[in-house]
Length: 93
Image 1 (cartoon, rainbow, N blue to C red):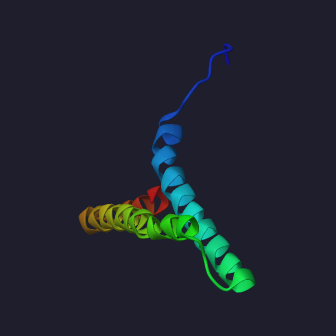
Image 2 (image 1 turned 30 degrees about the vertical axis):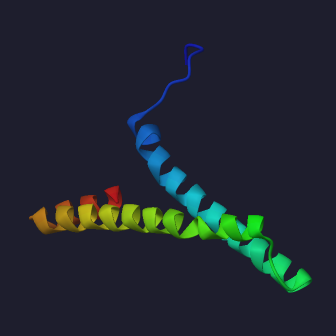
């Protein structure tokens, strides 16, 4: 290394996957927090509920991202003409 941060193509491609996963984990934490509060207090505040209400969009975006990725893998597998191509496409996924 020459003192600069070097990014590989893999690093750049990994960023959206990690962002999608982080958003989903964040939604999970918000939901779990609301459930814990409800269990202890018997209800949740408007502030907590407003946080929970935002999670369906996050989950839907993550789901859409995953479906698009799976569709891309399926298309690669459909185009693969040899066993080696299938193995490569599966490994790249």
